[in-house]
Length: 259
Image (cartoon, rainbow, N blue to C red; front, top):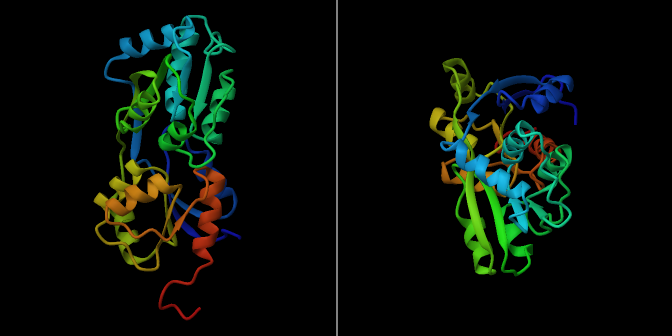
């Protein structure tokens, strides 16, 4: 579907603007909003210690749920003149999906497990083998205990370490909030539960004709918990997935619209 002339609200961060730029190249009129920012962990020394332990072969597995964690550990490894791939192939890596696998590949990590059923922490737990060794879980400050608890039930000793923090970004200006309320946007894209919560807090009124599109089931759940009505959900939590969901949402007439 052509996006020429479509007015879209797209979340960005300082490090991630490529998707918004892609939509602009397709002709969309983009309002880019930095709802969140990625900050260093509260205890950088703990992350450094965990990263060095991984490099020294202390872990049988690393379970990764975010590209931000991989990149944070990669910076530490490179600062020490090392690479995250040093413990491999003996050590193994599990990721939540293809996007995180791609980031692992960029830093030299081979990925052994990508869940088949669902691209989130529950998916990793479901497909993870039983065992008795150590698993490193570099996480964000908002991560749920699902991953650690699930792997521990399978016999593993899980060392969770904060690798990054999700904090407030600049957010929406008054003109954008008014555009959402007045129906001057065709769609709002939600790329995480954190983004959904911040969007809902900033926009008490969303015009009926504005479609809300979530990047996956976890984001959809966060959006609904924040009181938002979600019109379309990506079948895979990737930018390609949310692009397809956006097409589906825009192709569906708004309720009450005779077109």
